[in-house]
Image (cartoon, rainbow, N blue to C red):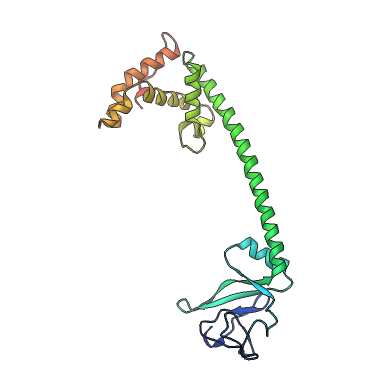
Amino acid sequence: MAGLATPPARGGPLVFQPLRRRHCAECRGGPLALLVVEGGAPRCLDCADLGHLVFLPRGDTALTRRSREESALSAVVVRFNRRKGRYERQGVLVEEAGLARAEERCLADAEARRRRRVRDARRRAVEDVRFAEAFAAEVRRLFPGCPDERAAAIASHASVRGSGRVGRSAAGRALSERAVVSAVVAAVRHVDTPYDALLMSGVTRHEARRRIAGDVEAVLRGWRGAGVGVRREETAS
């Protein structure tokens, strides 16, 4: 607040947090934590008829907006930033009753948002169960010999929301054959072959896949049914 220069006021009185010790030019009280400039001289909030207001720091945009809406009188609080050479908003002064009403409105909104989140979570849970069931049904259609519990496990693992797995891809959500087969191949690779052990022993991923490709193909051939082969690239990819 260099030299008590006053920036243009918008939307009600302007209140300053002074950088230097200031005393009220009217009642001589001080030093002042907050002041109003009238005629180039500092006034305390009581002398400026703002002493009944309470300070609400910046940070909660919704609460600030609603507090000003609920207050017949409010003021913006600013402080001069010497490094940046400008005044910066620190918060607002609002009526205590207005702040209380604003807090009630924000709490009501928060409760409404909480209920909506609960409803959305329930809806997503139902959708996820239905999708996993559809995915498992497609696994069983493509691989009739796959045990039901394995099909369910594969579908559950592949379709976890937010996992980035193949079941959550666009192709997976569309239940494309390629996506479903990829999920089955991945499951067989990890559960029915020594693939993980090979990786732990230092074998590279591509080499490990090459070594267990035959094992994967054998499992898939059995699940598909006698005489039906599996493309080699599906098991090695």
